[in-house]
Length: 106
Image (cartoon, rainbow, N blue to C red; front, side):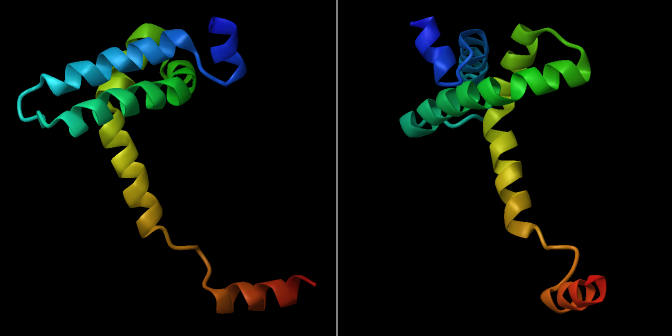
């Protein structure tokens, strides 16, 4: 089973740590107790931890279990911040400036 997960790009240890972090988030004060929000917190925590743990772990020099748990705990907030950042992103050059720049480079 673990080989199947690995072939699909999943790391079981990171998924479990993220799952635990997402589950912990449900019980924090002020957290939504709605079933959809609770399931979302756990799933997003697990998936976010799966994809971010290794990078954050190497950047900060922390262990994978701790890193995966913290990412799982903050997974909903991390994803929300990424979505807001993408929505508000503006290219450095406008189309007019990039076309002028492109014609000068040729």
